[in-house]
Image (cartoon, rainbow over all chains, first blue to last red; front, side, top):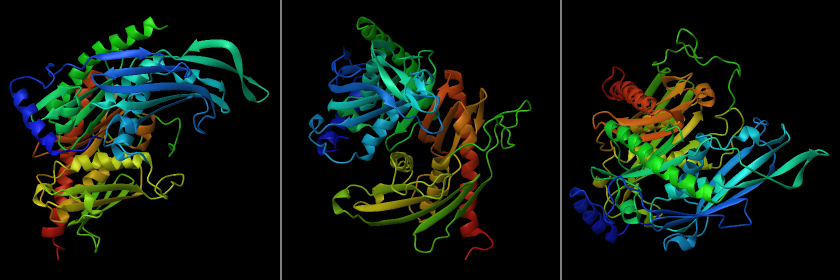
Length: 272
Length: 244
């Protein structure tokens, strides 16, 4: 996302020197995520929304819920679509225009983590089978960049979905008609939490910040659900992991994920 | 893409899968090194019903020039599906899925290719999916490694790839299209056996921590099987009876 510069090279040297002493540039432990602050319902015109900061990375997610046509082969299921976009104001190197491969990956990985966990029970989002279903669209926009957009977008979308209010529609005269004044919660099965780990030299750090992100050799994003199962994973970056490292990353994602899940849960309950 | 039979049994009581394989048995794999005249290196793979052709060019000049790097060569990968490669005609323009897979394969190959030996140049890998049947990214990555070796590009190792997964609560090797659509988890893995490094890893589906560990291990073992076939393909071309 942010481009690589001479400054990043110098920072990498410093980051590695610190890691050799078991320290990180911002003083965190290797398996410690940054402070996560969540503001629920930041966009009142959306059906659900959240503005979150993960360290200095800031993401706004708005959820829109509206009737839609089902996909031809899944007439008995509602739609869930999650996107992510990097706004030009988030970093000096971000340009307008069609999304570049890293942003496409970001959007797809964010969507996959939530989708594969079956967080939203889409089978309950049917207005009239094969004709009309409820579509849930969670759109993330990155407004400030300091590394690890994968987790920031995932937390923003999850927080927004947990607190979304869905309108009700009835099937009348072959079309969905809004039932005024009726509102409900989305059918939620589980709370997915993604945890991204960066590999810098031989060290693995949780939730890399912008400087660490620019210095890392490889990364892996692992999403876990409320039962502590692993439900999605994406490796990236131009180096690899050993089998042992990947197994350890799985364990870390469950441990760190549980802490963040509590945070997401408590902030959504405060806003019910 | 659509399964062949909606009521199909993914795993029967004897541990036999919907296409007759055992749980740890990969599909039929045929790899051929070379084959294209104009490419600097090429490979063709048939992996079950997947048919994939890979051509490699370079190291060569970078266009556009601003993409070049004075410290190292760059690797560019395009994964592309033909409109006729799947059940319903696919729009030939690159989809978001194809763009992501191109990036994932590029990042899986980068640890293997010694790009630092060719500053200011590019190595282009073109992957064409002629027929798709589940597991194209793994088959494509496997063939791309062979094509890079065939082009004589210095490499630390070849990347071998295969998917492990979970159907009917059982961890299996080499997920086919039906198992991908109806199964519980799909985990494509790319692995460099002599470097012992996992360079591609993705997962769709739910696994317990124990299943997760088993799934990675089964995948890594599968990659070693694929690796032997990659070496055999190169051996057949350069040291085989019909070598020219």
